[in-house]
Length: 269
Ligand SMILES: C[S@@+](CC[C@H](N)C(=O)[O-])C[C@H]1O[C@@H](n2cnc3c(N)ncnc32)[C@H](O)[C@@H]1O
Image (cartoon, rainbow, N blue to C red; front, side):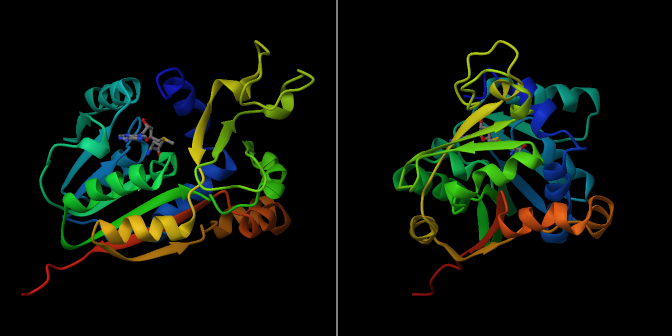
């Protein structure tokens, strides 16, 4: 899915000036916790946006994994331009060979691609297998619990979501970035717009709705406990610049949430 959109992903999704990217950056800063001296594994690292930040914020060793050759190529290109010691592996997290034990495993917007409990449970096993006992998992997910009726509210932040309403387990949710509002095609719904100049169609991908109960079960089955979901944070400087009214909608209907869990300690027989 990311083969065709790797460059557009970098340009549109990781645009540091976009409001949601700024909310992500601030949430990352507020919730990632201390990194000094930690060994960190970034699963579904994409082109390395967060992988590089983990290294810059003091992690002792950072490894990124992604199944998309184009995304990994962009990540390696950035590493070659500015060598920092990050290692990137091209692999599917569900069938990942052991890469060692880490203090912290992170995953930003990968779990929301799991299509079923089985796939999510395999991703969770990949997380747990690389965490030392008591180690922490932290990640971002698109807010799968957002009701489809609220999707139009996200357009003011440059985001289009589309999905069946009501959402059922395993339903696809198409997420599109760019100026969907600029597309003149009469029936543009971004995801499968045919207009040659539709920006939004350039960077669309598909998440899948799985309930929080399914997430809890998959985490638990992998030995990841105390799963917690938190809302994103908005930088007070952004609140002051764009005004509370602009951000009120996002805070009431956040497009992404954070999740955290820890690996169980081994049972003493
Ligand atoms: C929305 S992108 C997020 C990329 C990056 N974490 C970021 O936040 O910029 C999701 C990434 O997860 C990767 N991905 C999805 N399923 C995966 C799997 N089973 N194994 C490895 N990578 C996967 C995709 O290739 C894609 O690069």
